[in-house]
Length: 198
Image (cartoon, rainbow, N blue to C red; front, top):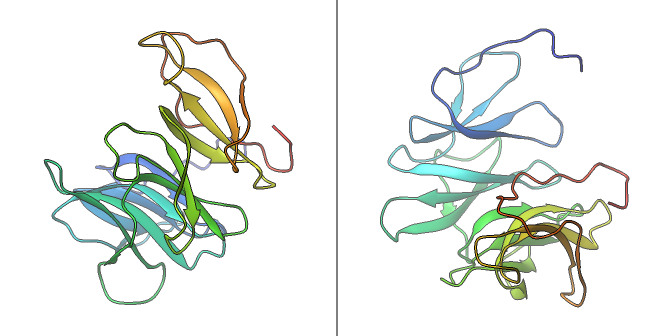
C-alpha cells in the first residue's frame, strides 16, 4: 500500500468506510443510505432504508453479517443487522440498542457505547445481544485487542471536566489502564495493530 492507484467510488459519502474482513467490500453512508461498494468500482449495493442516516457499521469477522446504527431523528435510533451479501433490501432490528458496535475478533462478543443509557459508557454483550454488561462509565469505544482481552477506549468520565484520555479496559471490567494524561482533546478512531499486545 503506497497510496497510488486512487479511485473515486462516491461523490457524496458520510463517515468512514467500514471494510469487510476479506477487503472485497466496504460499507458507507451516502445520501442517507447504507451502501456496499467494491474497491474496483461498479454500481453500489443498497443495504438499508434511505430514510435514515446510517453510521457505525460493524462487520462480523466472518463477513456474513453487518450490524449498523440507524438514526432517524430526535431520540429515535436503533441497531439493525442484515446478511452482508444475501437477503432482501433493508435489515432487522437487533435485540439490543446502542452505538458504535464492534465485534470481537472471534465474533462471539460485541462491544458498544451507551446501550440505551443516557449517562453513556462502554458495554460488552454476546454477539446475539444477550448478557449485556457495563465495563466503564464515561467512555467512547475504540477497538478490540487482537486477543480479545482488552478494549481501547477514550476515557472522559474520570478526569477533569472537558478532558479525555486514551485508555484500555479489560473485557471483564476489572482493570483499566490510562495510556495518556487527561487533556482537552477528543479521542476517537482508535485501532489496534494486528498481532500486537497494544
